[in-house]
Image (cartoon, rainbow, N blue to C red; front, side, top):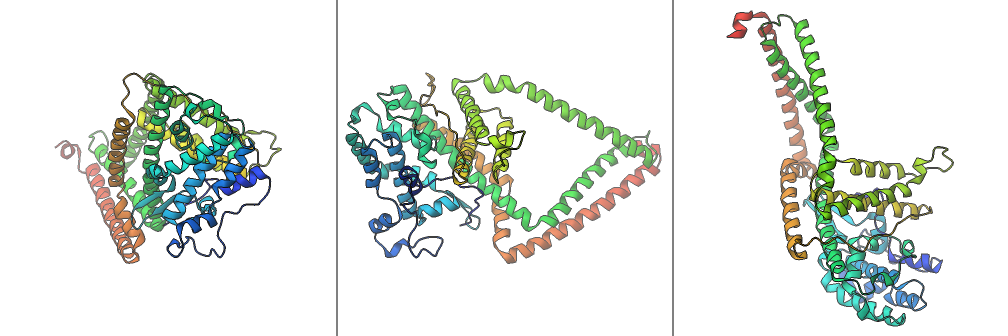
Length: 465
């Protein structure tokens, strides 16, 4: 599988334990680890996990001393289950997840493997173990489990990507925030969890399409640039040919003047359309359901968190050096935030993309030894009276996203491009095909030029006829 990692998006449990203990007592790897993946076929699962993933007893021990809070302990329990799942299912140890990220792309098989999506898909198998450790943590802290909703806590941790972040960020969070949560809050957390899960599945496949496109472009960049330029020339000649049919134009100089004026007018018209679209956007985006409004509130909140974690970029005196890569992350966040959208699905995708960037920015700062900033992530969610059940809404959202992804893959010729990238013989044949396209476009351009000259010099009567 291909790994495309510019910034880490997961902070492993062993690093959390080291942060809480103030030492490097716990490691995140296996001895004699030379390959990119660990071969789990020659070792018992229990032995493998005990060597690679920190023991959950360490979390229980820390929690019994009321440091950290039971909520932080629950985050680490979820991390423990996640890392064990990835190790057994995919053969990646925590250190490798930290270094290479949670998303793996395979162009040859046209697959996008997201460890976080796979874990949520298999969550039911791990919930009994998580619940058992939850009960032990609560017992150690003299808390009554019946006063707290286990599913709501898990949905909150997974649905907001909290388990991917450093636990020390949540030192001010308290498990008491989940004391006797109301039924609407429980349903809202479940809705949010399922929506984030569906959107992450979509984004994983979307990034595969992006990666295939970028790899294909790099592989055939020179020829593709030539083809694009030839197509643009041919498009301009088509416009000139139409103009040359005007009886009032009798020379190439007049034709060029007319074409220049046409370009100016068309660009002004495009700019006017953009302004009209922008001015009408607010009524569309903010005038719909409470759920849309809540998503936009969360989008603004997430963008402010990203901006605050990129504070060095905004300093005018430049007293603090901007960490490497921080500017790229912030530019990506600004582009996503300023992207104009007009429907609920795109709003959800936008929110998820910003959450992904927030994870990367925070972990990037943690690795660089910089201060991290994170506001309070809301627990409550708006509940409209006519909303579907979580399962029905998940089905509808998944159907919409699947249809969109199929259309995107067809439009981008993902399968066609991936084959020409992975197979060297096909790549050579494809280069020959692109060369023939260039030759065909050159011939078309020469023919179009000849037609334009013919139109300009054949007289008004022939043009009219």
